[in-house]
Length: 157
Image 1 (cartoon, one colour):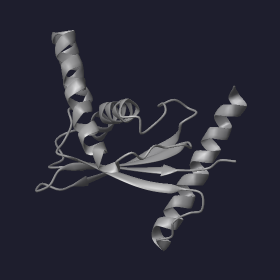
Image 2 (spheres, rainbow, N blue to C red):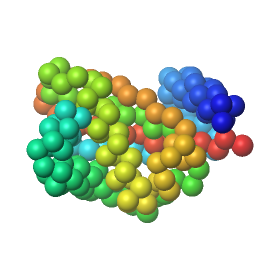
Image 3 (spheres, rainbow, N blue to C red):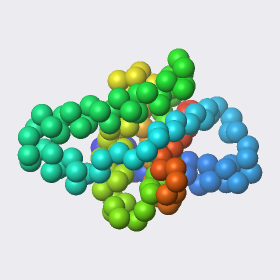
Image 4 (cartoon, rainbow, N blue to C red):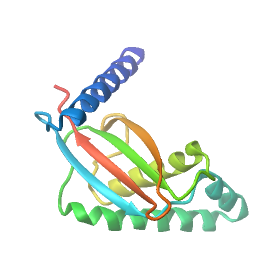
């Protein structure tokens, strides 16, 4: 199992360097497809979810379901596109201010987004075989808070 984990980490680092280079050059890589989803507004963070879970588990489930429905609504922009290969995901979090911690924003958000993309049948699954890695980038935009999710399909063979 350790060899497999190391291989995934190496592939992720390799892809991150590759896509940063390609992003600067503005070239679409061979064998890969980029799609982008924009989710308007902000999502609840991990602290909000934990508080809701401790208050009432049904309240927390409703919070997650509502957040997933926002993601699925935004995912309609992709039409019938589905990832056939493993994907690398780049999350860009545009927050209205710096009040929330970055790790709280992204941890619950990534979970909800990936689960919603599986429900919408854009991703086959959200396990190790289907998501080879991800990265988070944080920005401030008081006028237009949003979450941009870039999905990059990659052929690892």
